[in-house]
Image 1: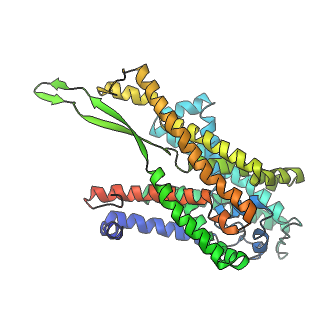
Image 2 (image 1 turned 90 degrees about the vertical axis):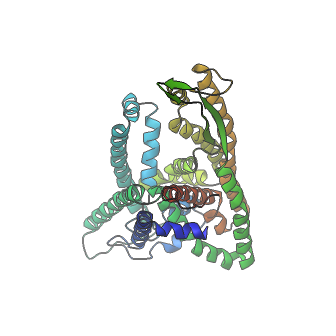
Image 3 (image 1 turned 180 degrees about the vertical axis):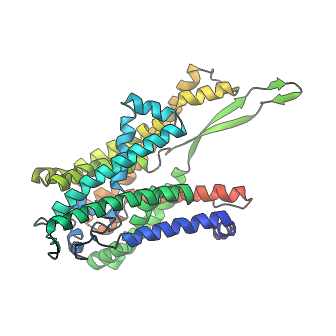
Length: 422
């Protein structure tokens, strides 16, 4: 591991990408502590230490404590994630979006542009909602009286929306010029940033040994998660020999690697965003019954059941979006490849679908259990470290770490260096 890290910094291009990624993340963390104009710094800190409002606590964790600071990045990346979910769902029901998705790079650029505008629209709704919520009696934020309140409110809303656009831009910059997926790394940084304070709070309220025990259990679980995250079902592929002139082509054997958890952490992010979407609506409308409903969805048996079902559903949904058995079978046929014992065409498509379904179901159940079990434990213990360092956070951190390491690994292999994975 140490030699791989040293090798990563020996490659000039890779070293530049790593420092660029770290610089963007540092810039993001800096923005998380800059309050919007007209709001006192630290006015909301005490309100987010109360576990009685689990929806806001979880939204605060995913914003990297930027929400409790009411900073320029208070909205975090949730508007972008929600916009991405909406666009993914709409591709299945709107023919024009389906055609865009099939157009290749040009179509993806159009969909990305629509997602950006939708993200800014959702950010505007969230910004107005948070402004009204934080000025309510439950939070009691008082805006500065030096200038008219309407002007201050307008500046706050525009600042928050600009923050959403800036976060989106930074995430795309990391993806294009840095290492790994930008949005995933921002979530990773947000979760890591909140762990020290939550660990200290857990040690103060329930004792040091309890906090240490939770950390030890988490560290013991991580190797098992890594093992399953890297597990694959390999479909063998043979290529028929073809003679072109004097050259003999084909006759090789390879495989199609299908990961047990092919969707990664996306189902958890999608399910979490969907469950906390009512909380965002409650923030905007300020209706008491909607607030109560959002709190009901944020914790308890209903949350556990919905989270479990949604994660399994999004595992199948996302896997079907990124992997098309029909296209795979067509490409194999065009290249002269076949699965041993399976006829080309319809039989090959059905075989791949069956294998995909057989590994997606246990993969979905696995990440659903990892996400739900810590929530159940927290309901009995009330330890804040379990919420911040629970199954969802672990899966996101491990998944993002493995994805980033894989990106670095491929760069090292190109320069003939030994990577992280043996």
